[in-house]
Image 1 (cartoon, rainbow, N blue to C red):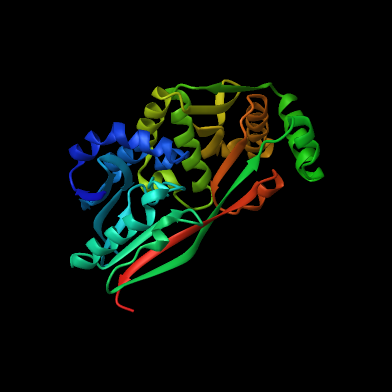
Image 2 (cartoon, one colour):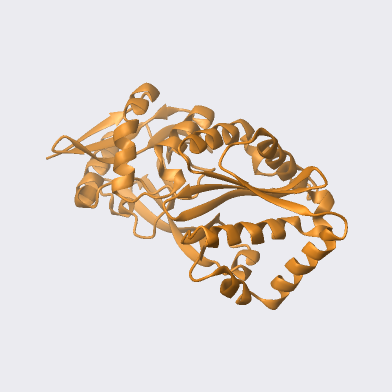
Length: 329
């Protein structure tokens, strides 16, 4: 027997967290961005409008969570997924045996409500269950969304690196040799949200984008405080990795990554634009991917975007989908 309820208060959503965590794990939602740790922290910093989270129980057990909120966006009353904008994988944890039935329930609820204009649900899997939503008077459109990408870490690092384009291998070697003529660059990995490294990440990221006349994601989204808190939350769960390069007593490059299962998710990176000629961004990625190989992770996920450099490093595309629901035909 499937039952459904709507959660519209943050305290009620917090109370669901233990069950929600177990559900996400059981349904192999193995990305940081679909986890309650990420989404609840996101809501604390960016939540607006009214929570509208669909919760499904099958014979009393939690079997699905569709975490949404209703808000004004671009002149419309929009129902969005929690985490939208700063997250890259938002497929909700809904048990496969109740998926189609759950979508009928969601469609029926949406058809009966008149306080929304559009549902715009992004960063979903290609086979997302949300594509199967049905309801009287509702139109469901499935669109291609921005791809993500990942490196599969098979074999050993030396073989992987030998298979990279000659130009990439040459440039990384030359960058390292050029920097070494002045001083050694020290590579470090931390599982703690070290304040100096987090501060360097935000400062360098903003400085790099400002050289291009743009604010950068952290400044544009006012997400510095969120990054600090979510890094602390994931560190407490043993799921944070901070990669950094220190050069002449300065942190000159940083990668903020999250661990989920056997995958490293490279969420945000930055390097000091004053040292761009020394290629510290590439050097740090080289050391970090080598670390991932040596620790036997299975993939390095670059997240959203099809920048050419990712494919030089051996990435493959991961297609994503967006589901848009409107009233009428």
